[in-house]
Image 1 (cartoon, rainbow over the protein chains, first blue to last red):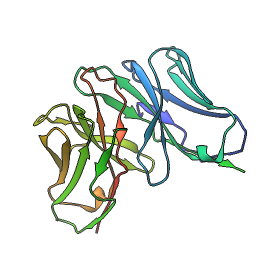
Image 2: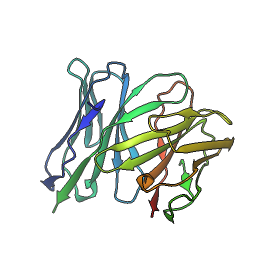
Image 3: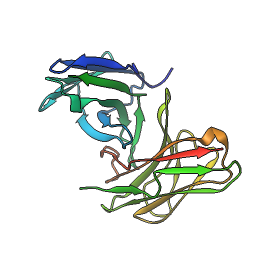
Image 4: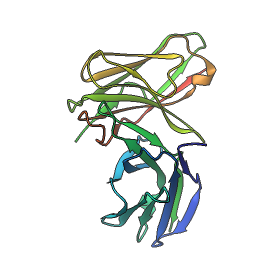
Length: 113
Length: 114
């Protein structure tokens, strides 16, 4: 079993839809979680970063963590064609020497006009 | 803005060749990483370094080595390239020693080994 599981998609939604992207994880040592967005032929870029259970909002994006069920989500409101990308979730441990993130395989999202 | 630069976007090498992938970051970050990204497998950590001349094995170090002679530069070496090393290679950097800083990625090197 992978430490971080993510549905690969592709997920296709109409412009303006609310998108829900989800991951489950198995490693109880994860203390923080990140969402990265990766456009085609580009490296991943950080989108959201959360430590604790609960919600964190940044513009149209909301990251949600439920540590009791080991479930993390990213919600995108009013989705735009420019949101079309692959979204990677990741869990991290505080190790004191560099950081060791474990990534999901990514969900491909397509927002259509 | 942090910039992580990988020297080549596309590389084609023959089986058995020694391959060098170079990565440079311009933000004085302590930590640097090499990942490979494959469909269905996601991002997997090959090696990382949290200081000059320091290196740590990641999850899949077999067949690879690294070099970090200067803080800003982290090289990935394939001693004898094999076809199963055909992949997208991503370099990343981050600051701090606590381990919770975001990773800043380069745009990747797509390596094909024939």
